[in-house]
Image (cartoon, rainbow, N blue to C red; front, side, top):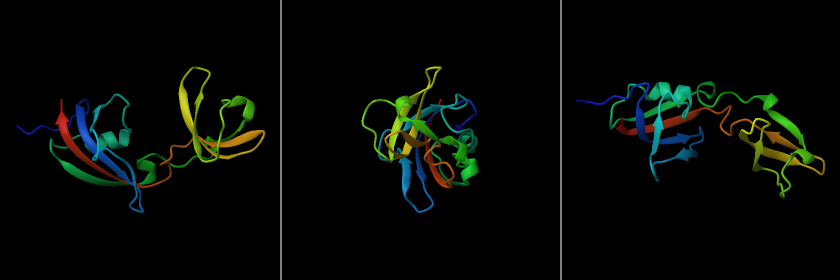
Length: 142
């Protein structure tokens, strides 16, 4: 019997995300495969929809527009943050910083520029606004 990925499957897979210029952005093919529970919010919904229905052992490649992958870049997610609201450690431009929200949740931002009083921080996902090629190989389905 051929196993097929369902909307609530526990899936073990290798994946690779490649940018339009051919540069790999993320890949598990050279490392440990990922195991994810579909429907649990561990993966982008658009990517989950592509994986549902794939067979065990299947190797597939999908081209996704930016809107279908990590979404469009949103200018409102680029904010100027005052230095007193930032951690005390040394901060450099083009570095990733972690922030803690009032509710205790954590989120990351890319420090685009910094001066003595503030930093320009981009809270968009690094792949937002970019089309991607997704390659997946289904290794296990439970």
